[in-house]
Image (cartoon, rainbow, N blue to C red; front, side):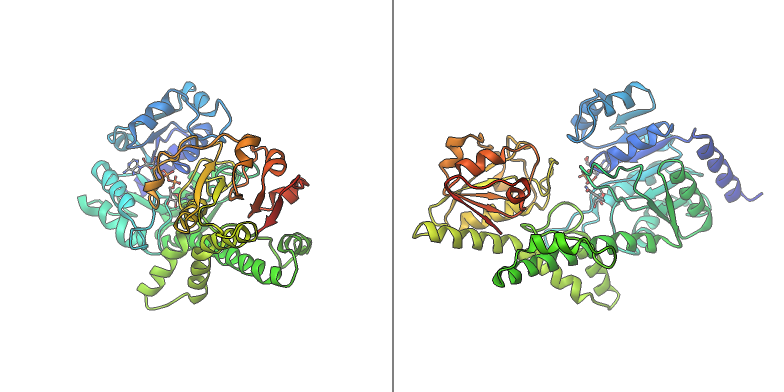
Length: 449
Ligand SMILES: NC(=O)c1ccc[n+]([C@@H]2O[C@H](COP(=O)([O-])OP(=O)(O)OC[C@H]3O[C@@H](n4cnc5c(N)ncnc54)[C@H](O)[C@@H]3O)[C@@H](O)[C@H]2O)c1
């Protein structure tokens, strides 16, 4: 029996018996749900994070992600199967190491693999024969093989022989009540058969379905294809919104009627622009890599430009509607931004279009405040650090009535839209929330945009 085969067989048996020790590097929106799901499947799991206060909060059973069931973290910790840690030496005792750290854009809006590289260096420092390392962060096709593998191999161990290397993209949809980490099929890819079999075996015991693909690059490409598909379709529906409006047609009615077609159509909804860590970022990774290999993706690039311009379009629309009410339009107007998260019911402002719109409006001379039940205080964000520390206003009839316009950018469920409809002078609704709730304005106007 070769050494590689013996290492493979030993790990496989431990996976089947569920006594392999798993470490996740990164306990964010992706790493924490994944670590909990793995521990709930019976594997002893250590969640590592550099952020010590977050580690302490998790170990204290605090609900650090708002949409989690109240005692999910507390139960996992109390069960003894899960613990958070800031001690990198825990990587050394793990049999399986999952890397779930951010992959944002650099200030030049290019792929920033610095977190992944740092995490891989951390894993390399503790790498031992027989471990399975799985990168989960979104990267460009080829990154695991050409960037991560050489880092892991620096100490002399070889992927596919001494340790095993796979890529399995995260498809987590934070706040989605219909799909969980466990029910979303998991793509698993590797460049050698042993790594592929091990990662497939592992995830088959965690999620309802593991979907093996033939290589690391294919698995990386799947994630970028999914997100670029969304990017293009969101750009398309926002473009159609403007054209249909000029024709006197309501895009929301069109989409909901078109969605009754049982094949060949998938509904995408208009909005104020795209946000989060995935949809605005993945197409940049894909496009960047395409250029790197002498190819191009003009449709994806056009969609990106369209989405990037969406906040400015919305700000322009606010200005136009205000001009109907006051001579100076947005200049000097008081505008209330309703919702700063990039999507409903989560506390995440990464790449949020609401903040970009707020910025545009203030450049036009508007005075903006915001209301968001998830953010009593505006967090520090990469793109808008100057907005940090602003405070959410209270949503009362008097407050709402004091603004020239209320702009709905995020349709959080826990907002009193009836109060807004009754008190606001002008509402601009980018999410169709008032029509969906059947709310009509009392004295002011509600404009879909
Ligand atoms: N958030 C989503 O909806 C989502 C969905 C699918 C895929 N993804 C992808 O998953 C990856 C992770 O995203 P996220 O949203 O979980 O990020 P996040 O910012 O919520 O969490 C990342 C965590 O990693 C920690 N971290 C960073 N470097 C570390 C290191 N070297 N060692 C230990 N901990 C470290 C940070 O402190 C942070 O807590 C990204 O590639 C992202 O594109 C995200």
